[in-house]
Length: 431
Image (cartoon, rainbow, N blue to C red; front, side, top):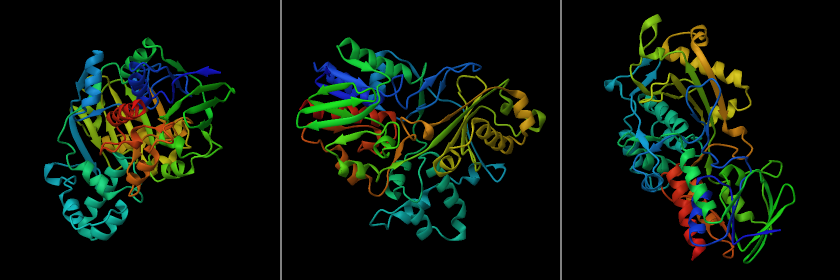
């Protein structure tokens, strides 16, 4: 049996930053991670055939993120602003400023009379059901399913509108070398202070009583501590006993696990396609050109595509999300690539043959089929706030929960909120 003051389950962003805070305070910390790597849904990878690393998971820093930026500055890790033009295509045509279908002011006018929250689909059906609102309804649905990876039958109207009100007003950034650089910095801080990070350690059971915890892994190893902090993805808390990463609590915690199912958790399939050249920059071969393409929103199955600008690597990243990703989660990599080609053929007025001829590397990342995440990131439902209060309330000062899905900020689902919530919970443990 191995002993620590505090055991942290999950070495993603929340677990790592909490481990750093706790070890800095002099606590002996064990981090138990089911995968053979740190960083969780941060996943910077190198794939043969590609000219640069790929961000299989978290990729952007959105807006002013003080905790993230402070850590990057402390670590001396550079980050840079994304560049490039924004394009929006609908019905085979690029929209200009005069066709702006992202003017959501009507949504806010209609929502002003709402006293109680309701699922976004109900809001659209009740308040924007006239034909004249069809374009704004379709765009809002695409945005909810694409950006927030949400099921509109479940996602909170109030939460969406609060999040969207400043959208497009702030810059977005990437970390040079990938998000893994920040995870490595936090990991090294933990190790330097005597903490241990144990990889390929699949937690199967947590036996507990006040100020006494035993954590049992799949090899029947037992780790003991006074307290345990659980930072696994929401999908694991929502899972059932047949799933590989399901954790059994003894005594059980039915109220918390039932509450977890009241928070939204979305699906993402990410596709990376590198080409011989950035063919989209030119109208050669009758291509519908997109000079200095940064981000493109479309009405295809893949609702967003982006480049690496200011880096000029001819790489396109495709984003298949929400219920549509769920519907396609069991397709093979080749089948998903063909769906991506269908999307690009429509967007750029070309065909599969042209795309295949110019393709140099391809990669599909399907977060729904990852047994240690079972999805990508969270979104707010009308019951999320109450559910988060239930989950984050410590159990006898012994069991604690943290992660992006449990943040009380409006930017849940971001690296910033994972870090924020990890730090906040670490401070609660130390009280």
